[in-house]
Image 1 (cartoon, helix red, strand yellow):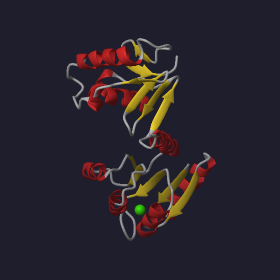
Image 2 (cartoon, rainbow, N blue to C red):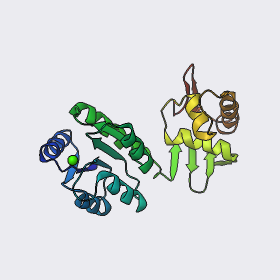
Image 3 (spheres, rainbow, N blue to C red):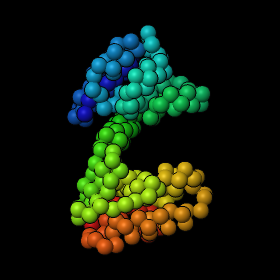
Image 4 (cartoon, protein in one colour):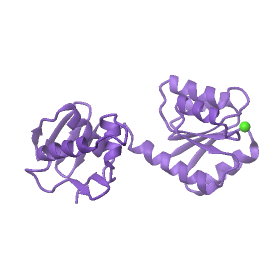
Length: 224
Ligand code: CA
């Protein structure tokens, strides 16, 4: 895990660097926007902590250039200004999280860990095996115990959502939002019906059952 810090204020930069390395994370530190962008484009970072007000390119410009160059690593913004406009602008440009200065280091570390976890689970995996269930995300093929299973596009999307977050209980509302693009007060019966269909194909004739209902919460895909 390697983190790039882009921060012009020497005290804050050193403080971040020291704290993160004590937490076992590798860091590089850039003191202005141009250096930051240069390092970010060249290095293989898992996360960038990016100050907004920087000499040279500012934080927005660095982020914009990164995204334009196709770099999708998570970006945590540090800003002294907690104006709503700034937050909206950052989110539009593809920032993943915000921290308003001054912040407690524990808070920063918690957000950093969350973003690193999210980044690692993210789209890079092209296949997944869970017990005897095999999913090929690129070819969109699914098999269980070596038998090919045909899924509709929605069923595949649903399975993929589960499979990208194995062991995590996914609420119906989240599933509805991600797979059907419905907001959370919509009728989530559609989710139950779809999960039942998916189970009929993926679980009913096999052991162990991999899709579990967590009463009152949602569903989880895991090896029991
Ligand atoms: Ca600054």
